[in-house]
Image (cartoon, rainbow, N blue to C red; front, side, top):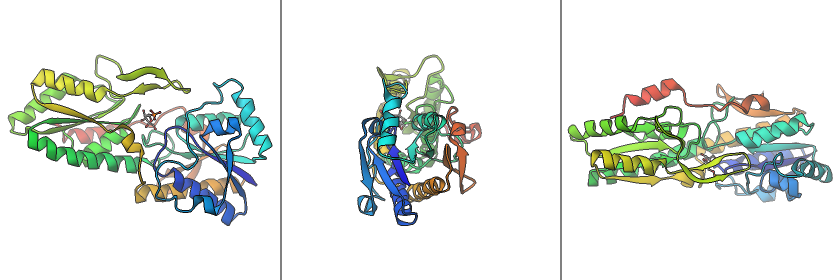
Amino acid sequence: MRIGILTGGGDCPGLNAVIRAVVRKGVGVYGHSIVGIRHGWRGLMDGDVVELDREEVRGILPRGGTILGSSRTNPFTATGGVEAVQSTIEAERIDAVIAIGGEDTLGVAHQFGAAGVRMIGVPKTIDNDLSETEVTFGFDTAVQTATDAIDRLHTTAESHDRVMVVEVMGRHAGWIALHSGLAGGANVILIPEWPFDIAEVCERLRHRSRRGETASIVVVAEGAVPLEGSMTLKSGAVDEFGHVQLGGVGTMVTEEIKARTGFDARVTILGHVLRGGTPTAFDRVLATRFGIAAIDAVHDGAADVMVALQCGEIVRVPIGDAVGTLKTVDPALYDLATVFFG
Ligand code: F6P
């Protein structure tokens, strides 16, 4: 069999571990050919492909990013995109495609699946907001990176009696903010699922100050929204999946804290730092398990399924079940975190 593999959407630590696992088992055990598709769906539209063998994946396990490159190209919104993808699949004699991505990339995979292309999905996103899998690879690395940053911000906050606001990624779901905030001992955590009251945030900080705790950490997800207001946008630009560019809520919260309380405050925006660098051991193992499960699924003749982690086991679920509804933060977990607020 000739099997295509692509990485789409925002990159994520662990992508290379999936590619390596697919190649090592696909070529080494099953004797299939693996065709790397460059820059996500764009490569399939442009015929930009490369043969992958053991040599091409040597040494990539600990490397962040993706050796294939990624893009947010959507063939279903690009003129002639669907036909271009189909003609590349035909010209390259590709029997099945392994698509590694989040909601957007897998949504496209599902549409091609319905059109008769054999698609296998692998869930990826640092945001951890994909349904049907308990966790996506990349999330653990992002949480660890954010936690390290929060640990460092504690000490400088204490030296200067400051409020340090930390903005992390998380467009629709506050998983990174919640986990890193819990792990890092944050005093307030703001997430997209619960609109925040800035007056209440300030009151918590004042309360701490009255107790002599003049240094505080506020973790805010980029998609967090004030009770009366809307998402803070970096620009009006919209990508091919209709997403606006977020960013700036941390700055807004910081300015409000300064103005309302008179406390000295600073903002740190972690942004893409969370997506870069070497994956944690947990993410390397999970990505490897997903890669092996994906090539097994292709070999078994499965179609339109995504590999997923459920109760510690790798299972196959219909791609259609995983896309469409995002996995948001469990209210009970957020409630638990509020014990440590203020
Ligand atoms: O990968 C998902 C994500 O990390 C979101 O949290 C964030 O809003 C988005 O990517 C940023 O994407 P880009 O790199 O295209 O600006």
